[in-house]
Length: 293
Image (cartoon, rainbow, N blue to C red; front, side, top):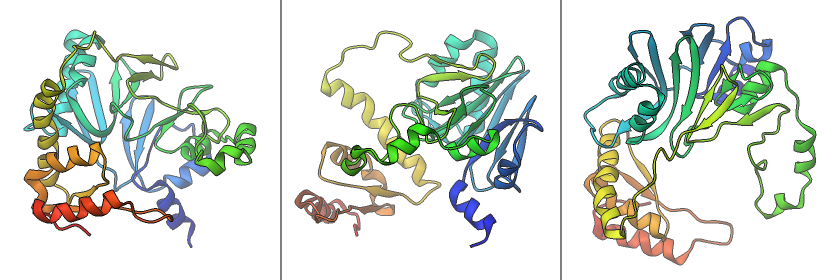
């Protein structure tokens, strides 16, 4: 397999935020041919298949990689949301921006350039992960290997020991905590703003005390938001929805009712065999109007 094909498979739809002209050769090779966005002293390199949008207000720019939508106004597209975020920050500051983030859903990472400095914010559950170099805080990327390539980092002693840890045989396939397998490369956590200027993460959620609601009140508020997301996604993408027999499955099934005719539902099984509940869900889908496989 050619090197270019290997790197694409490893970093497809990836991105790298790096200081201009300050990046090791392996990272330049890995990101060769990617699109580049100017962010002042930094450049944002984006693999050509990754979805990128941007919005601006005066001297503030907001870029997003991935899919973002406003569950209170599904008519807004990504550039409009980015422009609103930029305007909110310019007019009212960071606290107002954090409030504006609350109704945003999807799988995305935000890059905010404000007063010449860059901040990175993930979606609320970290659907699109991001990693950074803890020593200098200058490099952020979609894959820990990209940051390691950018700074010339090697595999850590912890990672070497972890490979032989007994927990690996019990499902512990990932490094503990915020660590990665590379020295000086760690994970950015959701609900934080990572500031390249300060080289630290600032937690911003929850911004206020959360109200106590009953299950019925929660369902009444959340149901339109979940259904609206799937409807909007179905307008641009072919949906494949994973189902098992749990509560999440039933919720997803109900929320996808409006798009069931255009979605593909699937279940999965382990080496021990398919669960009885999985088979029951697949059978029930026949009456739901979908075509499972």
